[in-house]
Image (cartoon, rainbow, N blue to C red):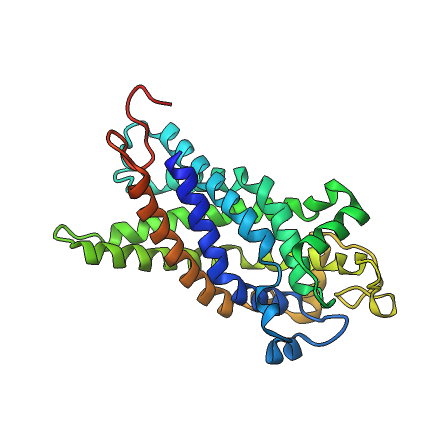
Length: 306
């Protein structure tokens, strides 16, 4: 269970640190708003509370998501290579196995990430005074039912599987490239921070177009808000109010805004990704060592255990 709690706590820490920059990233991806331009929002930030808007759902949800992610990754990797004794340093394991295990972890975490991402996205784009994650969740349930919480679930699942595959792959590759025989504890700590940050950037770079489409897809539902009709019957994409699917959104964005629209917000996202994942990986590895007792090698049960 050490990898579960290490993943949970490190995931919550990552969200607390990264949510302000995530608000900016989501608004840049969403493009045109119904009430004011994104540029206006970014220039004045409305007020300090806007920078933590939508944080409640991901703090609770992403802790659980990260826990499931690391447990599924560790168990999948261990099942593919039973010779592993230290899951925080799977030396000798092929990188393609690490990618597959990461993708499996991403798919396993989908049950949490899909509703969490939807609520977070809606909360960050909602300009009603005093809106919270709980308000948004109630709006979604009122208008779409429980199944509505998984709106955009297919593209979220694809993003998570691909992204987390590259997440673990790039982290392990970076660690292997930077490891030296006479490495000090200080160098090892800096390596974890640096490789965690690089893994975050690589991950988002690999799936950012998918994430942008996901954001636009989920942003369409902003007119579902009770008492918040869309301006002149138009959606966030500026088209007549009806839901487009992921492929239609991608086509419309490409036609109207070009390829660069798929990467709008990647710069701020990369900064956020480096900071958040550097801290998150450092917290995870430290917690794994702190939680691991005699006979346990960083989350791998001793022989005879479960």
